Image (cartoon, rainbow, N blue to C red; front, side):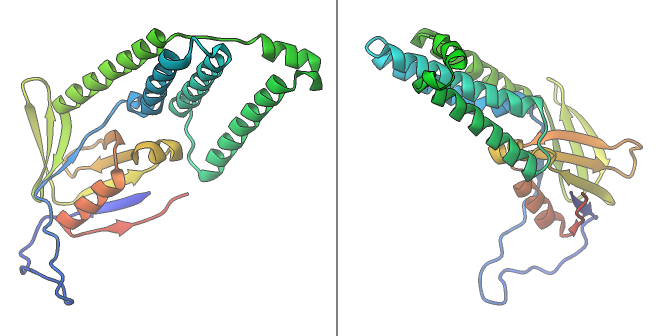
Length: 245
């Protein structure tokens, strides 16, 4: 967990370039902090549905067995994606275990699919699994996800936080309601509770502690959170890092 302490700006001498002559990047005037619903992590399923729809439309009728495998592959990706949304993987060890179990499950399925005589009972059960979906199903599935993604993009524009050197602003509501908080002595904690979600979109949780608020402000699923932390550090010029197990 990274702890960012934000203090009010003081007068600083202009530094046009570093000692080596390289121009120093100008700090941002504001940093937007936007929380997202977890459905944004379903984008691998969205692309899998598009790929499966294209393949099925072009080759599905001519290769029935390939259509089964494409459908099973899509269901496998969808199941893994839903597992990411359902469970938290706070450490890389849990992520490694997850991949290992997924690999073993897929290897077992393929083994008994192509070699059903190894264990006839299991082989017959797996051979009987022949799920099939046509191109219309995959394209409709991708279309529903696309509409939800567009809805999320619209919704987050009406609820977000803006950090400036002197103040913290909360924009919310369709009429752009605004609430202001003083920036001096503001503390921001960064937490990465799910390694998988962080790998997918670099997401994490930001916890804002304002001097005038008794309760902390929690912003879930901030995308590319490390870049946001760098921008905050560059703009406000104060960073303290602490690691907690």
